Image (cartoon, rainbow, N blue to C red):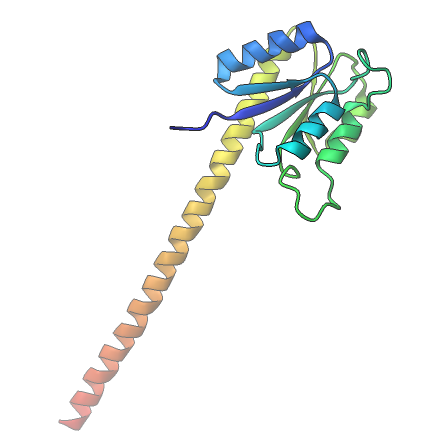
Length: 180
């Protein structure tokens, strides 16, 4: 039985979160786990370190339900913490969402490790699905490259072995010819 892929969705607007969750589950067939704040995501990750998502969809402004909630950028930095020695979440792609078209925020987040920065506009869901599909394609290409590298290494070893055998046979024939 194949394990369903998981997406973490961090969104404080419940209506928006539920429609996004249902849409992603229907469109991609993934399991979507929703968190209302980044702190709840961090708590879940701490308690369930074996659940590594395909992607994390993270709203930038997360303080509508809890005024003191950290923003998505702060949560992303904690998730991708490069100082943590073993961090399986460091390589998990993060897709930032926002209703504010703030170029400097977008640039900062992309430089700090976000894979994409998507506006909550009329093309939002289509853009989100495209980005998630790109993540899956990149992951599949990376896996394929690793397999081809392993095959190439196997062929290289086999060719080296055959070359040595060929040299030994030629050497033996030459020695045999000389000794006659």
